Length: 172
Image 1: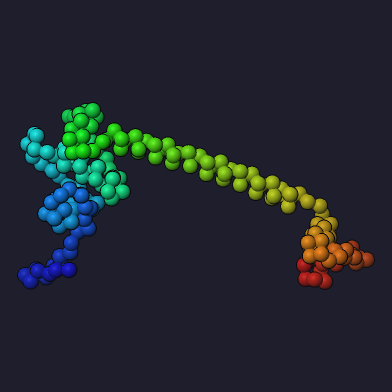
Image 2: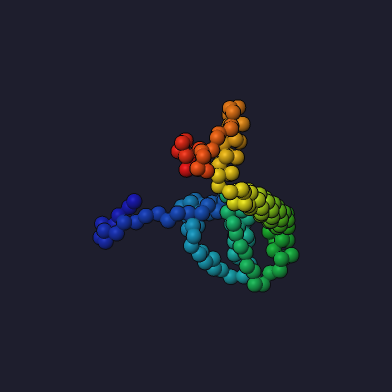
């Protein structure tokens, strides 16, 4: 972090988004400011559109960055033809994006279907648990099942007053 002697203000470097464009990253100290707008000015034909398009395409291809391009004067077809001179196939990138979006939608649909199936199964289990027999019968059945699973004799006699013998085990 640098500091100016006159003002005492600390100067910090802005986080940069590399452009991938030969020479531009060196001149700009690592790329364009990340998360900030950058205005590119110049007369018609000076390369503003090509600069913006190359920045976006390289960001997508080389750095995995998202990007949006808005053009007011050039059509989609004109942009595809102009950028082809740089060696980029915008139509292929567009198809790849569309393919990825379709796959993402399919995965989201499958996830939603699995979640609904899980919820249905959970509802069935909840219904089985809540619509069982009376408490004493449920506990006797639970003991029998636990005993069967342990391989032990699961028959536990109930007391004469109708209380459940599981109270002896602390399972009240």
